[in-house]
Picture (cartoon, rainbow over the protein chains, first blue to last red):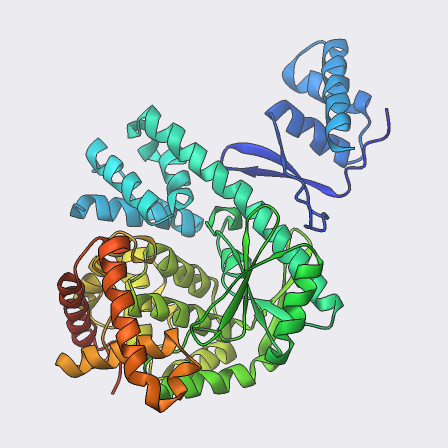
Length: 87
Length: 401
């Protein structure tokens, strides 16, 4: 898996939806925003803040009182899907 | 539209426009019928996203049925996606033109949207750019064609805009005039003078870290007023243009910007129109009266004006009989408007005096055919409506003598 370059992306919470949008796109070809769920938006906020997948999973597992391994799997699955979509 | 539904529409818009003033709004007294009527009106005026927050995140939400919520969410999401598209398309077009030394400023669109608490909620269908150096319009069109845009149309009305289209069907209007000419020669001359000095009053703003250029706020407010007047003189305009003014003035103009706005408005003898517009924003959309740079007019006048706006819906499309507001009285007023329409349709040919009668005949035939086939109404109904709206404009003292 290539490292996700999220510097160009912002998460916008608009109209009850979380959009992940490339705000540096030149605009000739429109890169549509991706709709992500609440879990995904939390994950990305931590990843954008420089946390690793493991650190993110640890924070979220404590916050949601869930098993760390399970959350880590969800975090990695989410990042893999995202990687496919935005790379 | 019932009075209570109108109030609900205004209150829902206020909920969106001024988050800090939400405590003063009450939604208790409204019925489900009011909610349905308000939602229908918001659709007609293309302001559905403006009522989204009130319908989903205020005490009103308990009364809104699921069907409305579903449709509301769908329309708002579509508007948000379209806004993203237009923001980056505006950025792209401005940049490819700037690379060729062609400077532009954004009219309306993302510049107007940027004044709202949520800029993605303002519905727009195209990109409007004003070319600061008119002599570069052909070069601008060529640049865009080379970048893959398709030539769509050159507006025959004094050639004030050239329309191109992106590959995904979005229109880009390149303007060489701030507004289409009015029938008032003096106003046109003053606007032309304003356009000559426009290069000196541009400024930047940023959206998601991307730089855009528009006019300084006083001048920008004036262009929004002209845009509203242009639509008012034709079929009318809906509540969205009023919201644009309310959002801009609520954010505030500094003393210099207020001075510029007042100078331009007075110079074009549009203070009557400005008073009706901004007073309506104060009385009905909750704009802070202290932020209006001139005195307010009577609320009764604004009620009449608002009635015209509510009937019009977005750009007057709700009323097929609407065509124009006359700037003169009686038959002379009709003739003047007819002559003005002819000049707009044939800007070059109408300068040849001898063929003017032929152009009148062509304009008349087009008018009659359009009424029958496109508007599906009669000339009589249109004349009647134009007369009524002109009387209203006179009563409201919209145009100064």
